[in-house]
Amino acid sequence: MRKVWIVLTLLAAGLLHAQEEPAEIAAETRIPALIAIAQEAYQSNDHERMAEALARAVALRPHLADLRFLLAKAYALQDEKESAYNALVILQSQGLSFNMTGDPDFENLRGYQLYDYLEEEFAKNAEPYADPKPRFQIDGEDLLIEALAYDPKADRFLAGSVTEGTVYAVGEDGSLTEFITPDPRNGLLGISAMAVDVDNNALWVASGASPHVQHVRPADRGRTFLHRFELDSGAYVTRYAPAAGPGYFIDLALSPEGTVYVADSVRPVIWRLDPAADQPSLQAFFGSESLTGIRTLTIDDSGEHLYFADYELGLFGVKMGESTAFEVHLGRNLNLSGIDLMRWFQDSLILVQNGVVPKRVLRFQLFDDHRNGRHAQAMTSGQPDFRNPTTGTLVGSNLVLIANSHRNAYDPATGQLRPEAEVSPHKVVDVALDFGWIPPPDGSLQHLKKN
Image 1 (cartoon, rainbow, N blue to C red):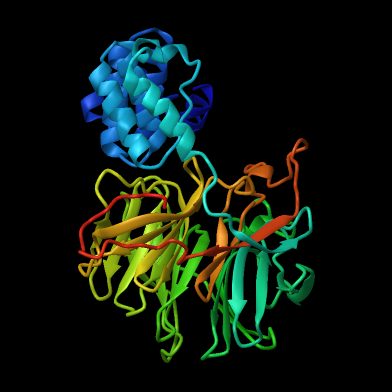
Image 2 (image 1 turned 30 degrees about the vertical axis):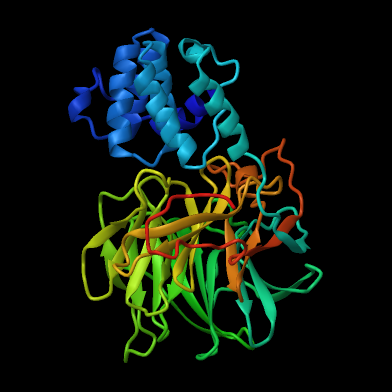
């Protein structure tokens, strides 16, 4: 699986250049270092050392499916069939898909019924499930729409561009009309997230100075802002910046009373802003050096719990008024890596996973303890249009989702479109969040399934 090695090698790039010899594997805590050790061992046919490094990496990052798949490969190369099959069965039961066909590294597993079963089930997991309904398409090759919000009062969608820093009103046919444009006063950079507060006539916008922003200046590097505009008119109200230091606001959420929480993916920190305070300012709400980066966050209907996702580490929550986070899980039968968007709907977390195969939208219902999953179910997965689904907003019982983000069409270092990139219109779809939703009536815990 050359593709898996390439993805994980990107994590390891540049980490071991100053290290003459890797530390003892059992004491190593850096995932890139362990990946580099495993890759070197693979190339030198030291499969025992490869397995040792990958087993340590899986223990540190149990949700990273590619690591577990490579660990299965390391076991298979040593003819440790039971260990290899155990790793593969976990991935299959999590609803994920990997292609083992023709891979010589799995030769020792072939000829057994379980191998044939896994090949068949991995293929089934990749099949499209539950067709989302098309809503509209957004044209524009070089807009990089990474924020979508819905204004129920005006019955309109708003879309935010990273490259232009412009907020557009979206017509029913997907046509765009400029609503808010960047200027020296509002200081809009690349738009990464938006949230609508109808009660307070507020449109909250997160922006930051990524390389993709066409109007970014050298002085803007590392700057990020939380902006407030009037929802009805688009008039600028004010903006807030975090304490000194580089950052990038990537997502935001509103509590029922209108308090704003914004995720900084660089530090990583969750900031809190109370607009009703005498002198509103961003205050650190939660942060941890053990996180690899906060990607998305949401708040439950009660306003008592905030949930956030780390792309590598999985799903966590914080109870309001407390300073420690708790892990949210559903046993080993649910993989919670690669979560790029999360929203709260009724009694469930809605998770958009674009870092796994198949890419999917999950509904994840919690027990009353707010930290353990009761039931998880795919609302849709494996759609041909799901080329990096990444941003969306709730409208009624639907998640209105951009199915094909253009993020991967850009060079992350330069922010320029890759010459070979194929950029098609954004396909915006409705994912029904109650389609086939059948939680267990007896309150028992169930793992991911398709109906």
